[in-house]
Length: 208
Image (cartoon, rainbow, N blue to C red):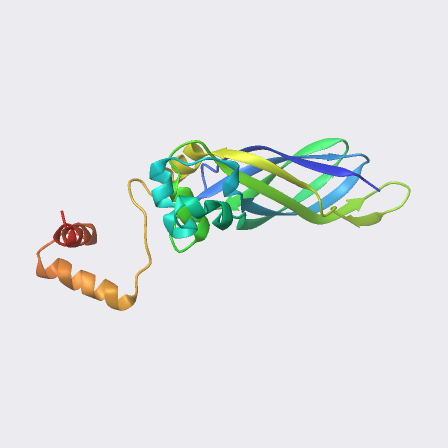
């Protein structure tokens, strides 16, 4: 049976993708020739593996509560699942695994990533899948359950990806009735955009 191991070598933006996407380059090593691997990975974020500035702490309050509770509230959480087909190889090969991204603040990972200002995003890759082995006879085996690795993604890579697809902008989901009311407010006050309507509402409601 083939012994396999995995290491994330790099995570970088996919330049020509229509939607925001990162590509994780994974080095795969096997002790004997492999016909193919149907590879899966669960990608998680481990917030306890880094520290946070005061500004980042404010942005993470909705997720983890006040800083004094973080030892109990910060837990590893799922970012996404990804898959890739690894073609036949002997020794070591590389495979690209797509990481689809969203700027939707309804998604927990997006809230976390948006709050970060510098440093790295502490990622954990948990690998699984099916290995097809050739040799004296064809065999099928599962990727062992304990195949995992960490990778620290620079926050700058995430921010560059967002800026590429949403330059100086983002989006939030609102109920239809709120969108209608906001559009009516914009028209009633002669404003040119929904951004201006929100800015005026914030300014009117600012106690300062």
